[in-house]
Image (cartoon, rainbow, N blue to C red; front, side, top):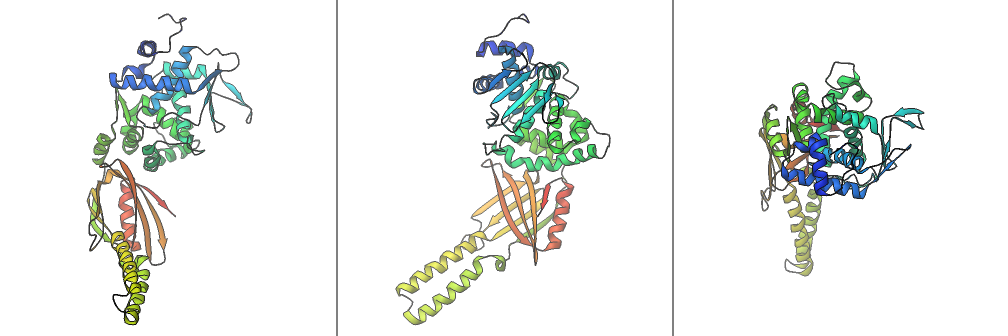
Length: 395
């Protein structure tokens, strides 16, 4: 194909173009090449890709801009940036009116993305400098897409706090002026670091693995893809979770049982039991009011029984069980420490309330469970979580 020839935007035309002009595409297996083309076609059909300052929008331009957007999100289920409906292409840097500065790119919460074509293309001409304007701006768009309530990828939404917990280490290294693998612009704010990190990940993942191994694995898990040499692997989350487990320090064996007295069902059971007792004495055990109160008492008890929770920690495995008598072990989840996403701590008068968010591989869902226990016990546990770079929020 000659450089001055345009392309046809069908599967065959896109395949031929990407094989020749988009290196990432050549690293995909045939199965994922089909997904890539399908997503690029949808992106081109659903977005307005327009030129500014006289820039001409050709089919090649549409194809390459779409490819950049799809590259970042190939491993995600919800991927189409549905809040951002317009991509505006300038020939070179453009004036950003609010600051009166010239920008290479802009992801605006008004629902559009601006790109300097010269900077965009240069990002792909040099695949080893860890600078890629397309990946950078579409990373912003991916992060901001849910800002107005638009649907966000389920896994990305819930795992992001885990990723962020490991990202802050590298981010603060930049802020503190320390020598890092990431370019200085990543220290501007955490949103810029996200984009700089993703740029770096697609071009030099091994550098991240050597310098910040937890961040490397969590980025692979978050984006659900990894390019190594001439091969890009998709749908790699479980494999990367297993590999990440090798980095983790085993926890001390522990068992936490929810105290019955802490349950809000206890006062209801006590009150309903007392009322039921007086009703039996006044109206008889088989009277209508006594039977109704018995049902209320039993229903309240079942709530207490079902919510009784036990947390068992055995090295790198965590088990959560619910129930203690009639409903003993009706709910039972086991997961590896690598599947623990984040911990939230809320101190109360006589102890600590904390919650765990974790990923359950059996049904591919995230869960949150709450616990009450001694302050000292919780602080010891949080110290172990910090060692393993688990994200911790203190309220």
